[in-house]
Length: 516
Image (cartoon, rainbow, N blue to C red; front, side, top):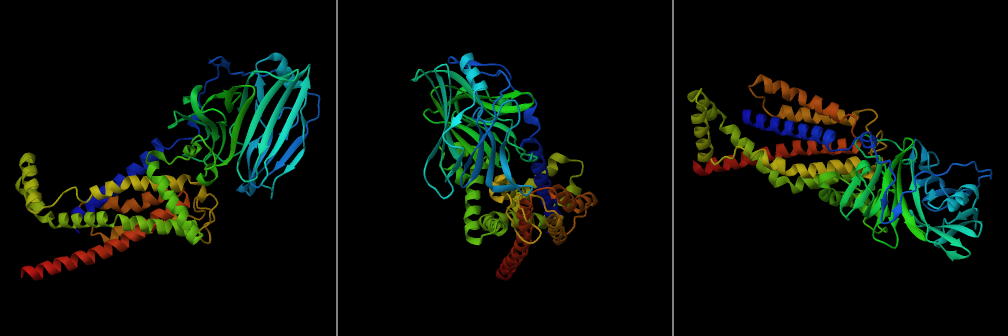
């Protein structure tokens, strides 16, 4: 390899750098951007209206908390209005404490209902509920258990029912109103927010509202409008979500709103009404039992159709090795093996281009100041020697979608959250606390650079010298799982270059002997 090899490698590195930086800054969401503006007006559609402003009155009754304990979470519900005061996930921690997905703060409580009828709303505000139980423990119990809350006044009864199961993150929530023991059809809105507890605001991940429209379109925050084709609506963070899902219909009249600095989702319903509530991780395994395509909330960018199979393979490898770090290394090896023919072709093309460098320099000297003649002579030279000038770059470009798909998987998959690798790396979703892995990655890039003969162009030499430093700085804050992939890829590239070099030398030697 000579000057052309360096040039092609430089081009490939620059393309990769620009794509990574550009994709990161322009395509991955900034959590602070989505909350700048939001609709904040009552909306009417199909005779259902958003009941937005509740009547705030002091409730003199003492609030009692109803506790429901399941395998996956502990939920506390207010006896005053049936809102969720706290929902803690048992399997996940944040700052050494269990993740509190729902916290009672903000203008509305989670699952707070606001009724359009003023009389019913007054009952809701001033009279507490009487539950059928103040403590429900489903751990070790596969039965379906109902928590029923009732309040009555002036022959009007409001009934809220929560239906819990031990083996799933979802539960049903229904509202029914009776007058003189006969059902009433009353309009109301149910809310969730603001946002999700005190969950971490990860850079390049969305924190806010998200909805599925027309079964395939994902919309977030201010792009969400009340629409009968909203199949589900949710509040999400990087790894978790709380979703409203219709039970007896295919869609919800729902939307997103901003109130007093808080960000809420809501659904407009008519009693008797029922919603399925999913409150848990954005994991395909736990979302699988839920209908209405809630799995689409797990998003891996524009190449998600590649990312999801890669995540499946990653999880399969984890089931074998029991370590996601090892699974990443093995998956990287599998990808390198699959793309080996393309990589070999790229390496061979660069090598062939390097051989033509002396003749290309002769043409440049001969046709100096005559660009048209130089281009024509150069193309004839390529044709004569059957060399494709883009042969070194095209195989690399073909692999870019796979790279970005895996990039997004390693950046966003909840499976890596809190997953240890070795020694100091205790969480593959967080940056290396001692920056050891990014430094190793930079060293492997430096070795790659040294194995490639330096070009005679001083500018290229300087740029190539700084590439390992630039990449090290860029990756220093990335999740260690992503850095592990890149480092492994570098090491495998080094090994492959050594093997390919020996193969091509052997082929050239054999060809010379044949022609001798």
